[in-house]
Image 1: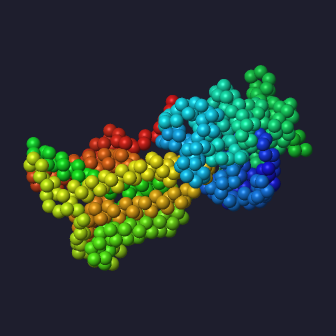
Image 2: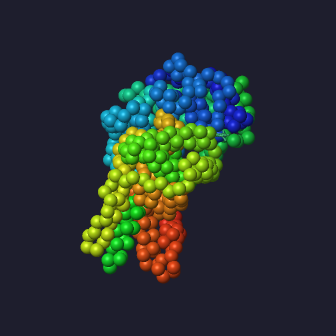
Image 3: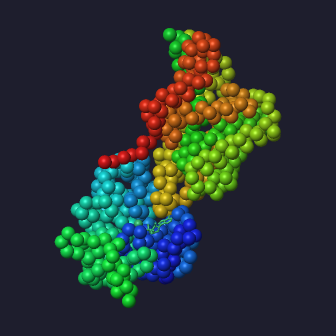
Length: 264
Length: 294
Ligand SMILES: Nc1ncnc2c1ncn2[C@@H]1O[C@H](COP(=O)(O)OP(=O)(O)O)[C@@H](O)[C@H]1O
Ligand SMILES: [Mg+2]
């Protein structure tokens, strides 16, 4: 199980971005972390994966535990060794390497190129399109294929917990559905635990069992996927069901009142 | 016609040696994303180490070259750890300034330790001149170019076919994404500088056996720039093509134009070529254009 307890994070020693975040992800589950732009979702993932240090971020309070061991102040390479991998926002494939070379770098922690090669079958089985394009430069793939590659790289690292940062970003709805369905299969068949960060709450809550809503560095709401889908505020702000032509943003004036209601 | 072929052959051979010089530079650009302005000075240091160790080992080339390579690995790693690692999240310009400073220090310290007289470097290659249909080739240069090609080929294989080579390319493509997959980017950077040190020792030996070793050897570093900008700063194949192009242009300018203008044109010809190429292909002939999809 992954647990965060009262995590506070600052960037550059001044900007407090996470203001006491607590959440838990049971092994074998898919948990959604929802929130608007700038809420701190990516920061939560970087806190877990150890990538915070590279951005001058620091955990000033709180605990992060995975399978009973603290991940705090652990370098990213060791976090990966423990089976926790972040799939970065914006896909971030190695553009000048081929698809297969990208996957082999994903298998870097397996210790040898031969071991990494032997692991290629798994991502190729889930993403046959990548197999077809194995010799192509990753920079030339479509956005959807790049997202598949980014997830596959994590699979190559033999991860147990995948931290997916907005995999639906900029993709057509049909592709989002395809990719999320594969994530669900990886979860069911490979036992992959997933913490799924999304602004696309609709898609995320369809495959997640549980969800959290993050706003301005705080968890303001959590519940089962059904509960969240049934919640009027989530429906209005994230599912785009606010009524004809009036899809509102979270920065709406009414937000303040609503947040008080959640917190109260 | 014979003159043309003679100049062409000379240009290609010397161009391969330029490519070897550029290889060390490319290794660092690929493996740590730093533009190393001290490459010429590293070669200078490598050349002196070989020359000194040759004297100390009774002219045993293998001991001298092996020893120089070992020392240069350490020098490379020390530069990475001591100078560049503390600057890792600083702007690229700071890193570049740091490499310029390293170059200046080496250029100042080497004559203090070893003086300024030219030392010859024993060549293991056969001496004398070969002649094919009127074209003459100095054997040491021919052999030096052949070994340089082998060396460059080995590194190209290393990049494409090994776990470390792939990781180095990944780090130069996207450092954070590499870290997210568990690549220890600091270790990769140290390896890049270490292998570049090995290359510098080998280059110092090869160039030293052709030109001799003295403090001016460091000046060939300036030619790294036309070579790598022609070829792209992070492409080994590009370094080879860029090196040969620079070698040919320099040789032709020396053979045809220097007699007319009274000498010296061969020195600026590579830089002119560089200007022209930059106007046509700003990312170099082989360099990565940032891949853009629409
Ligand atoms: N490296 C950084 N340095 C300083 N501030 C940052 C950095 N990364 C993110 N922030 C700030 O932290 C806040 C949360 O960012 P982020 O975690 O990326 O949010 P989200 O992923 O939910 O869009 C934003 O206000 C952002 O400006
Ligand atoms: Mg984000």
